[in-house]
Image (cartoon, rainbow, N blue to C red; front, side, top):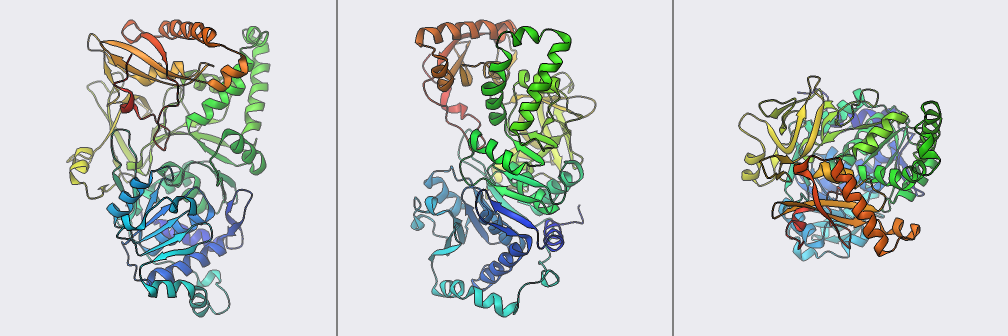
Length: 553
């Protein structure tokens, strides 16, 4: 078990970087590490005076912002349990999560709070709005009184101002519960993943030892902070080093992300495949498929010059100052991986899940292998539930410091996920080579059994289709022993290219033929079917497959 704790990392980073910028809103205000320290102390007073005890739950919902991060830090360093809620959740889901977790305080953005009903969240004793940390609702007058005299109480404790040598945080054990993270999942209602301090500190420590970020570096946070991936690697890890984190407070469209990257020029970039694939399909693919570029790419010396030019443009799009782009959350299309590797783009693909806070596998870009998602991290063990783990896909099982304590108030689900030997059953199918690199084939619940008992992973077929210019996204389903692909077209591209309905029909026929040429007979598609609207997704942008299994073909 680690001797270091998350609180130790925060304490050291705050004191060592007191006057340096810590947390900023993009094109908005920010806080130095010293200002963050004062906020933490101020809210510790409020929690104490308001009767909040160690282990009490505090819920937090809103888009990424400096205030979101401050309230997370104030909660966790007090010894309370944070319940981060994804802002995409529907009001009834938020009501359920706040009530199920028994949260006593809710920090919420104003827009979200307006959609909620406090009567549906009976455990709540107070609600604060994130925009200006104002008290919106209080059960007890004493809580209200404490909040309005908070500045006075803080000044009484620190008569002049708070100095680094006065700042100290309470000690915490790594085995104590730090967060309950409700994942939406794709087949039912979300479960509350219990992450202790050990899981969070283990992820942070691995990142400190292995990821290319240094004290004083800039980083942009646009992945949802309520999701373990964004929380660990765009916030907790860089904060522990003394970096300056800028939060994109709006929905991160590719245009906003590119603009922010070029202004802030981050040193490490975290992303999901959706963003990367859009960049490839919209900016790179159309250029390299044009004549005479497509022809010139076949000539050995000239193709190197073209690759260099493409790489320069790609690097500029990401701010041209990064050491590495880490992609996680889902698989990246093999065509894109291969092309990026060929041109020397500094990217790598990691693997994790909320239940591991989130990291399971990672390798730096210099060691990344095509088709893999890195090697098992040094604080974890992994094995493949198969008689031939290097060649025959089986469920990926993991154990180690990163693994959750279990699902909150759900013993049955916990016992299904973690076996008696302590192995977490990930639900992912894959193989693992002799060097510990993991290659994911798909989700076990998504696997389709072929006509002669072959295992068909729909994700493999979808990754081919999704690189096509007229395809925004796709999902493969099985009906009466045949495979069909539901395709949501890229209407923006189709309109710009002047393609009509008949033209799209011909293009899809061509895509069907090309896709099937890449696949063995038992995996071939019978038809591509146009799906007129975007597929419903989880907050980490996975399609909710169960909604489309019974569509009429």
